[in-house]
Structure formats: C-alpha cells, structure tokens
Image (cartoon, rainbow, N blue to C red; front, top):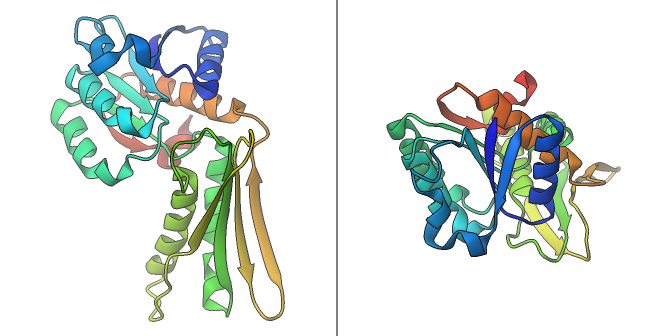
Length: 234
C-alpha cells in the first residue's frame, strides 16, 4: 500500500518503521509541510491508499475533513477530538469513505478494555472505583483517550445490566511525568480489600503495529469503525 503519515513524533516515526517492515511505501509529513492542510489536496492524495494521523487534537479535525472529502481512507490515532465524533461519522458516511479511529491501537490495551468491562460489577458489590493514567510530559490531552474509553466501557457495562442503582462515571486522575509511554490503572476498593487492574506500555511498538494492521484491514472497505470493535479481525 501507498501510505501517508501525518505526524513525525515518536509514535509516528515508529508507525513509519513498522509500515516499511510490512512492505508498504510510506511518506511522512510534519506540521511545517502541511500548513492549512496544503499536503492534503485531492491532487496531492491521488496516489495515496490511506492516510494515518498521529498529530495533535487541534489539527486533526481539519486533516480528517480534507482527507475524507478527497475520498481517502483514514486511520486516526490522535485523541482529544471525540466530542465531534458524530459529525465526523456523518461526513465519512456522506463521502462513502473508510475510517478507523481508536483511543489506543495496542492489542494489549484492547484486551484490557475487555477486562475493564468484566470488572464493572464490582461497583454493585460495595466497591468504589477510580481510574489513574500516566503519560509523558509532551502529551497534549488529559485525561487520555484510553482512560476515557475505560471509563466508558465500565459505565456501559453497568447500563447494559439495567441495574436500578445508578453509578456515576469513575473519576479519572491524570499524571504527566518524564517519558512515561502510557500506564492505565483501575483501582476498586471495599472495606475488605482492594483490586488493582493495570496496563503498562513498555514501548510504542504495540500502538504502531495496530495502526498499520488497521490500515491493511481497511483496504477496500467503506464505513466508520472504532478499533476496539474490529481488532479481533486483524
């Protein structure tokens, strides 16, 4: 595949490396080469099979609009824009494009979301809960998209059980420290004990591999997909 990567940061650089290892052609574009989406015109994207975005929350929506309107498939690993998710979904459907987004493209994190979902009934048995997330000092958004995804799956799991008792969303506490890749922890506490559930990323490798596999999976497809719903098919 001929891929275009938006973002030259640490994760983006690794995405490019993984893409080449898997036999793809990939070119990376940084913010200086893409003012006002200058690198995302229909003409510039003509030979591109898919665009991968690992940029920043304040630029990603403009990138999405330009690429989707050009009819290009996208894989978006940037977080901090999900309040606009319905608008983006409608645009993707309207333009008959293909789009995969994810709070996190790591297979391990998506397994952890399943663990989080299974743990939700603890809140029905006199436990209280909190979510803690730690990332490097350069991360732009807080709380992280992954922490909010954890919060969401726990709330949805309780709602799906149609319990009469209503539970507020778990509080998220964010830390920005050094070069921490990404740690997410759920802590449940009762008078009798504590339960600790934790995912700690040792490197960005899992994110990068998941993003490239998502682009491969998306080839020839149309529609709007959340990575957590499709990763088992990769």
